[in-house]
Length: 396
Image (cartoon, rainbow, N blue to C red; front, side, top):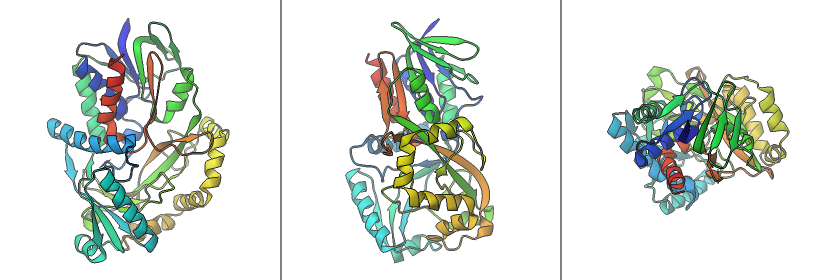
């Protein structure tokens, strides 16, 4: 059998893409192949559950466009399918003169991106958040929280109802593009499809090379650790509390986040991961380490961001150092409040020259489309990303 469409990767982007293709092409045959035994096993299922407004991103970038559209689409999707979601708003808190200047830049960017935001004085901040300390803050009222695993499960149910097949526990070992189809193989069996879409996240560079694509980047994995605060501390904040990020870094910094199930979590930090898919604190995969260390771009990043890297390692090794990052804007957090929770791994794309690739990145051939970079806010942006991919695929 030759399927009309095949998708590799059952994260939220792959699932959303399958739904959009079947919505536009009812009756098409579609198979979704996932190497894990569950859907949403990696980045989709290991994040803080924030529906981002899109305030940080460069105007006219795909990130800015997809995040703004995705926030609205995600809220509508949740309303249509009875998925719990809460719009609680976010505060970016400036704790120094430098951060106040950076906050002003973010506010200007928000206006260019069409995102509602309001600067707050110190007194206004205290009135909204009595337990938060800062010189000023930026309120982003549209930021929301959700459980992306629930969204992924709903998408999986919807595509199955439309006739899609989901093959779990099938690691793709071979990809070959032929004149009339793409051949997809694992250790036990194979499939053929007239068009293939690869949404492989942390393995996207390896799947691209397996398919014979020439790429000049590598996935460098960064591990982010989250702590949970005790239930009695869940009312410590009213909004999500974020620091003002360093514009030179792709990570926004350790923040306090309310979750849709009523918890309060802190995180994540960002330290080089020694395993692309190892969520334990000291997980190690020798192939992953070798791939990272053998890539010239990694060493260029390490040199450029040496000081930031040392700081992140300190936060990784020392719970007190991690606490100090939280106490910059929330002095009431105590060491005993930080209970080990979960970790996520970010697929950071780095060029051979050492540039951090911030925007979404796609590569197409006659019968394939590879999502090479889908960083945060990919979960928020999944529905418009899927819309774009389906448009490209079905217009051929």
